Image (cartoon, rainbow, N blue to C red):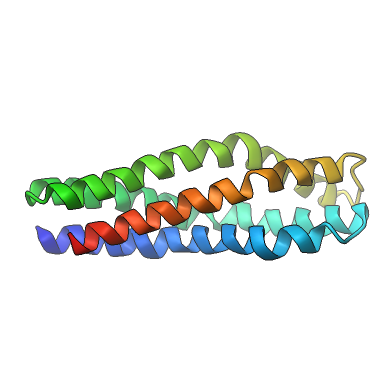
Length: 156
């Protein structure tokens, strides 16, 4: 059973690592870069970035959450309470991250994507992007802590 717990945790680390790395990149690079462009460019670029992100990022996100839950369950079944608790903490952090994405980021992403599709510049593009940016650091922190907790589960 330990091999299943480790395998699930490794899959979770790799999957969550995709979202974690993306969120860190957005916080460190994308956010200040987009702040330097005009509203039309912001709408076009971010609308297209979100188009591809919203299509492709759910796969590693869902896989990461499921693999994290599996790592916790397998560690419980294997009688490894520290590993199970660490994976459980990771799962809790991901379940805090998820509504931030669904309730704040996703609606903004859809609005910018729709505007980019119509070749429109939103009058509130800067405000929308500011709202998206304001939670990218908390999102990155949650993903990073979840990844760290999963690493603890691997060594426990």
